[in-house]
Image (cartoon, rainbow, N blue to C red; front, side):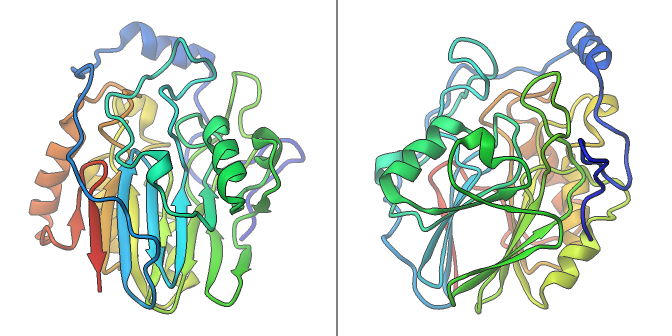
Length: 313
C-alpha cells in the first residue's frame, strides 16, 4: 500500500491528523511533566565488534532509537542521533540526559543507515553528515527526507522494497505517525517503518508509531514469513490526549509485539530525551508491569541500557 498523498501532504488512513499549534500550546501550558535527572551515567561495556557474520544477530542499544544491528556481515544503524539536543538549535530544546552508549568513533564501519522520519530526535543532520563523511554508508529513508539531510539517499514509500546487495532486503512499511521540522511543514515528508529481511530472520524497526487499531501491523506481518526481532517504542506517551495517535504507551507496545508475532523485541524511545510528560523511569516501569500482565518472559521482550548489547544466535 502506498501512503495517502494529496500532492503536498501525506496522511495516515486511520487516526487523527497531527495536532495544531493551538493544541501544542494547550499541552505546554497545562503540562505536568514527570521528573527527569540532569544526567545518568551509562554502564561500562565493550566496544561493538567489527562484524557479525552469518545468522547470528547482535543488537546494540546506543540510546533512544539509535540502534546498531549487526548480522549477515552487515552493520546497520537506525535513526542515528549523537547530538546533545533533539532540536533545530544547539541552545534550546530537549537535551539528552544520557550520552550515546557507543561513542561515534567506537562504531564499526557502517554499511547502511535507516532513517524513519524527520523529527529531530530521529533525523539528526549533523550526525548523518559525519557518518556519511566517515563511512560513506548507503542511506535509506522515507519520501521527502533526502533534501533535509543534504545527502544522497534512497527514498521509499510504504510497500517499497530495496535490495542491499545479495545480503538483505529492506521493505518500507506503514506506521501511524506524522512529520515536521517546523510549524509550517507538517506531513510534507513521509514516515516509515523498516523490515530488514536477512536469511537468519527479519528485524522490524518502528521508529515512532501510535497503535490505533493496529492497521499498520498486517503489512509488517505479510512482508516476511519470519519476524525475528521487533524494535518497538514505549516512551513519550503522556498526556494521552496529545500523544496517543503518534506514540504507543508501554501496554500498547506489548500488544503490538503480540500481534506482530515477533520472536523477540527490544523496547526503545525512552530514558534519553525528555520529550513528553512521562517521567524519566516511568516508561520502563510501566513496561515491566505490562509485560508481566501479558505473561511475556523477560528474555523475549527486553530493555537495554545505552551501550548494552543483546546477542541472539
